[in-house]
Length: 230
Image (cartoon, rainbow, N blue to C red):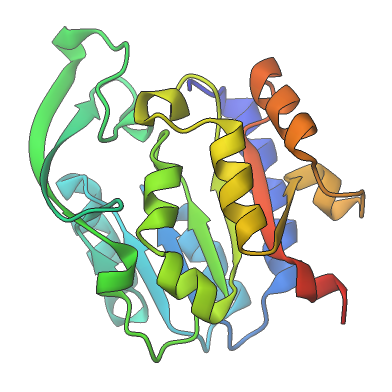
């Protein structure tokens, strides 16, 4: 996926509204694919008393995040997946935000392959820390990240904001039905950002597929069904 600057800004504004709606000062969070830390920075303003974790495998941005947040956020240099080990991470020179575990259809002259450690979310976050919110932006590997954190998700039932779009997910053999069934099996509902904020009905499997095929909306939020049944 190659999302324009204007669309990214709009999504960040919507996500900020969602976070203000679902988080409180004591919420604990995880930012997966933290990049330059813009979302983590917003999280700290909304939930200053919580425990916060961030993952960024690009070594340049990992070091910047450590300096930026100090002891306010525990930053890890790992890529997350459903297995552990070492993998190739492709750094896209002209747009580092597109970097990830799949090379995709990039100009080879502008991509640098580096080795990174790959972990499962369940193996990194302490079980006793109740996670309230997770943001995932990993250029197509969302399904694998979620599988690697199924224990945490089942245990703590966090609200999950994630990017998911055509042009990225299929490189990891993840399709709308795959992700919809994953969340449905855990009793989660799905919305795109704007529909969630407007209080519309959640996406069905068919509408989730349609949105993916149209390739215009890339950001979604998964919410445990019990949140709105109380």
